[in-house]
Length: 109
Image (cartoon, rainbow, N blue to C red; front, top):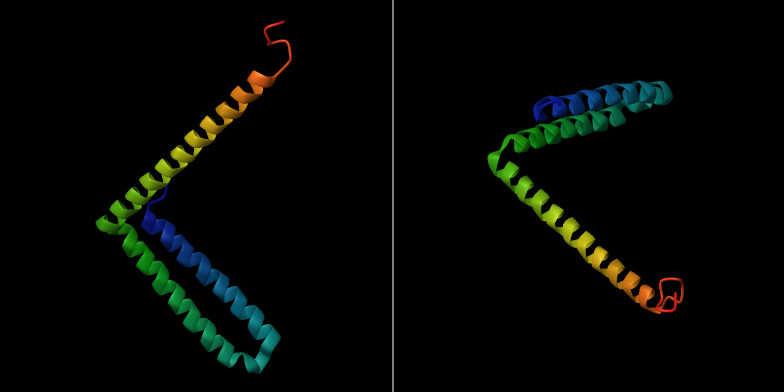
């Protein structure tokens, strides 16, 4: 398993590669009119790079790690609760169905 920094570096590299490919396609299709669009894409690339860097820094922050763990615990508790309630509801449905069933499990069988 890779560490978070390596994972986010990989994300940044992939977006950079994607950006270059998009730039090449735009240059081919737009020719001389691509200048403004290239500037906008360059700004977008810089913004994405900054966002990825900020996320990487946040992933190393102990307070963020604790919040993430707490959020994951809450999610796990909610999922467990939901499945428990669903299981209880199914048991009630099957119990009612078993009580009204006239099949071989009845008293006359």
